[in-house]
Length: 317
Image (tube, rainbow, N blue to C red; front, side, top):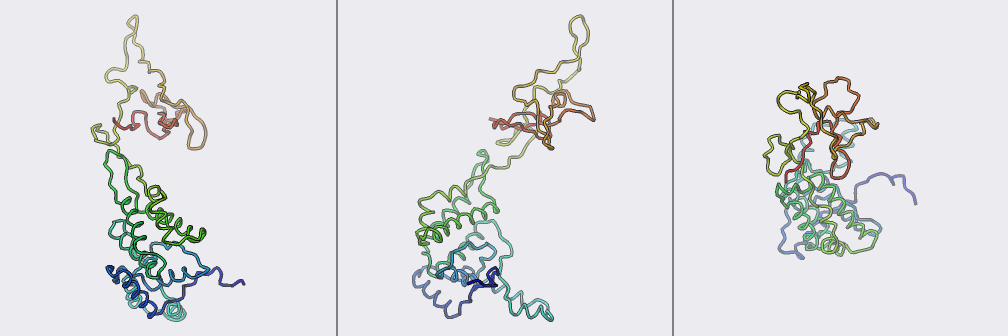
C-alpha cells in the first residue's frame, strides 16, 4: 500500500524513559565492567533510530558522524535551544512540534575524539541487543591501529586524512550492513568476518603517498630536490671560436631521449615543445612552441607542467 509520506524522512518512534532504563540495566548486567556515562551513552534520538532499524522489515543503515550524538551533546543542544530568541507565529509552532536533531558541532581528527564517537555508536547497537560489545571493539581497535600508524618521512607515506577516514568508515560499515541486510548474516558474524577474515580494513585504511615538499637547496633529506640539468646555459661567454678563428654560436645538445617532443595543450591540441625554452632560454613573447615540461615520467607519460626541464623535481637515491 502506497503512502503519501513515503519520500519523507520522518523521525523514528521515540523510546520511552522506562524502555531506555531497561536497556541500560541489561547492558550493565551483561557487561559489568563497562561504564555508561552521559558522554558515551547515545542520545535518545540515535538510540530510537537504531531500535527502529532492528525491527523486522527494516534495514541497518550507516549513520553520518554528525548524527552520532551522546546524551551530553543532546543536553547541550537543549540548553542552546532554551537560550534562543522568541519565535512568533508559525515559527514558534513549528519549533514546538518538530524537535531539533542533535548534531556534533565539529568533527576532529585526533584519535581521542574519534574513539569517543565510536564508543557512542558502538553502545547504541549494543544497548538494543543486536551486537556483542567484544566483536564491535575488535573491529574498532583494528581500524584505529591503521589510522594511528606512523610512517617515516623517507617512506613517502602517511595515514589517511580525516576526510579520507570518514569516507572509508562509511564504506566499511556499508559492507558490514550489506552482509546483514542482503546476505542474512547476524551482525556479530559480519563483524568477525570483516575484522578477522576479509581484507577490507587494511585495504580501505592503507597508507597514502605523502605530499613531498620541494627544496631548491639540494640537501634536503628524503625530500624532492632539484636535479642539475646538463642543458642549462653555460656560465661565461655565450660564443666559442670554431675553425678559422670565427666565433660560432654555441650549439644546443641533441634532443634528450627522456624528453617528449610534442605535448597536449590544456585545450586538447598537440603542440611541439620549445627546445630553446628548456636550454638557452626563449625570448619570443609570442612563441609558437609550447613552454611546458617534456620530461617523461616512470609511467611513460610526460610531465606537461608549466615549468622548465631544469625545474623538474626528482627523488635523490
